[in-house]
Amino acid sequence: MSGPNSEYDPVQVSGLSAEEVADLVELAKAAIGAATDLDELKAARLAHAGDRSPLALANREIGALPPQARKDAGQRLGQARAQVAQALSVRQATLEMEQEERILAEERVDMTLPVQRSSYGSRHPVTTGSELIADVFIAMGWEVAEGPVVEAEWLNFDALNLGPDHPARTMQDTFWVDPVEHAIVLRTHTSPVQARTMLTRTPPIYVVCPGRVFRTDEYDATHSPMFHQVEGLVVDRGITMAHLKGSLDHFATAMFGAGIDTRFRPSYFPFTEPSAEVDLRCFVCRGEEPAVATCRTCRGEGWIEWGGCGVVNPRVLVACGVDPEIYTGFAFGMGIDRTLMFRHGIADLRDLFDGDIRFSAAFGSEL
Ligand code: PHE
Image (cartoon, rainbow, N blue to C red; front, side, top):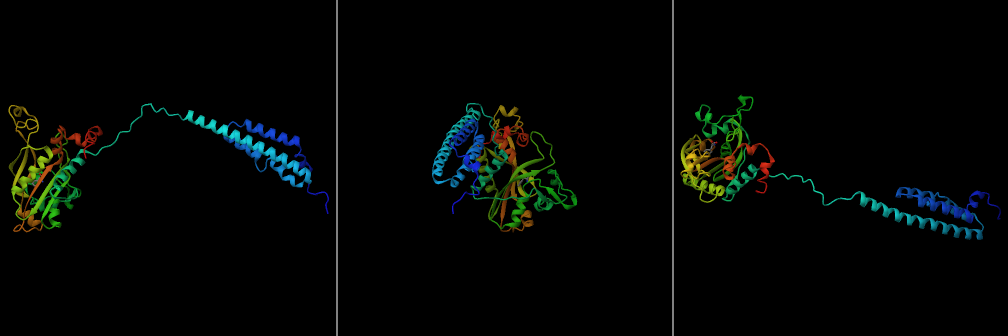
């Protein structure tokens, strides 16, 4: 039942002649050789070796040939396609190499050029200083207590034996939060944390509380409307002024080194009785003649004020729910900023708050 194949396409079959196959190979090689980059080579591959390339289409026609012609054409086409594939892979390798060389040349980095270094931030000396202070007390088994900076008037004043008409209220010029009738202040000292601690814990209490405080002070070399205090509070059986003095001497030594002199000066705070002001030996003139006479740091005093302290007033214990028949306690409050100024010889308080990183960076390695 053999006969002419009615679907046989003589045009396609003529493409199988040796000359035409050779032409196709030449055409393919020319296109491959002309490809100047990998994209162009990809296009050439598609056109001359892809499924719809003339050689691939011709290959499909092989089956329609008589057996002998089929074998010849198969060989011819197989060789032709192998030549094209070979040309493609050679060109591919060349172009890849060229591309790599181009990238290496174009993206060259000169490792010897100076770099623009980005500066590192550093922790602020008030932060590291507060932690250092807290650590001195943590090492003695105390705990850190914290309280809010926006505080109830009652805790900032009344609970500490500073009633509404108490003259000592004017010692601390207060920022009131609007509306004033709500009796909320920006805490003027860290002492409300004493009250909060006694109200929420039962003795024995050994806490230290570093934090921000606010007073309506001018901003100058020694004053700021925002500064930092550290409060200490101990409530236990049999606590005396001697424990206070010992703790503060230890604190002073930890901050300023062995041999630092401290002195207590009688003073008045409504929340402590007796009360004292703690002074440090002037770190500039050391109180020695003749330097002390002209010393601007201590103004000829030989001592500089460090903070306030005293034995907790029994009225405060009562207001905060502690039985003064069983417990006594001591408290102190020191300026952290002042402490750091003495410790590091910082002459102007504003350096601590102006936010110039050249200042704080100098403390960057302090932990
Ligand atoms: N709160 C006081 C002040 O800021 C300092 C102080 C604290 C005094 C604790 C005695 C006891 O001036």
